[in-house]
Length: 251
Length: 270
Image (cartoon, rainbow over all chains, first blue to last red):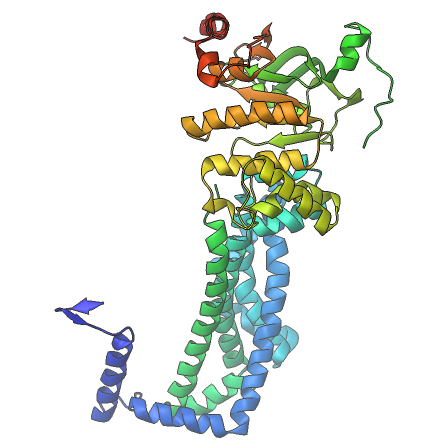
């Protein structure tokens, strides 16, 4: 980017915001906002604590298990909806309701059913991520070039071959896009789940920090989570780009 | 690969020699979609080793007929026999070339060409060798590891053709294969197809809406009328292919046939 003839480095905008944060923090205008350097220091401190690493393990475990379930259910569900009109009519309404519903409201029900533990958090990750994955898989499968399917059939593909060698591959860009958004929603799910359960993982730490006004630690953890969500999304995004490169040439 | 021993179960409509000559027999085929009648009472023979064109105005059901022969669409009534056996679904003795190429964008030329063999479970080494042979046959040597989006339209259709050749089917079904490529490529392609027909000795069934193309390439031209598609006329152009392409296109016999067909088809145009 260029401004007034000067080349501006890529991360410049981020730097501006960090400086602004530091200045506002130093001025002490809002007590909720400690200086940025304090937050970075807190981040360093966190990394030294065993409780932080325990919480990280618990959080990652819930996230990973929840996401695996969401993908394992969402992709086949979406594929079924994309292939069968009857299934689409039967399930489409529910998937569309859930994809836009405020799912946080359902977490207390999960707590009643599954208690204040990791199961509830895993299920909230699942619940947040699965619908968009299903919906995107449905879109991908529903828009497969018809001749590609005819081609496979005309060369004698069995149903298993048709799905394994054509349908999944042809829908892969949409499936991956769904998984990427699903990951971002899953991060939301793990945070909201843990906050509402509030006795495990980062939820417990958030609860502790905000109750005791430990704002530097609070922001350090928040930044960490944001960075994690972005990193995961970028990771899937880079796979997507590789696939999109081939699929971009869909005739 | 398949036994051709099944007796000619059909009531004798033609004499026995004609039956053995015809690799594809279409008998009384009707096709309706809901209330729309697409094809009406089509009875046809496709001689072995010949190139037959299906020609007619758009919407006359020529692609539908081709897909019924391919076993991709069921006929409403009537039946189709290939090598004497009734067609209910696609089979290894038929291979299809698609108008929009139908290549897998995520697979290389090599894998696309070998795909029919891959589905049959042919060992990797064997199917790669076969694919390479037919890639060379259609003039794409050096492009084995390219992806379809890196190729021009004409080259993509060559991949489609190589894929159909690689499964070693008796009958090649081509659905307007040159309609999505430019005129120069199209002419080159027509030459190649004639050469291929000489070398491969296969039966070609070819859907086109170009009268010139049909006359130039075909041994037999089947004209279909406007919807519902009915058999309008069968013409055998008997164009002499010994001359150069330009000479052939100036040959009175070629020009007369084009004109004759145009006179038949123009009544469907309004």
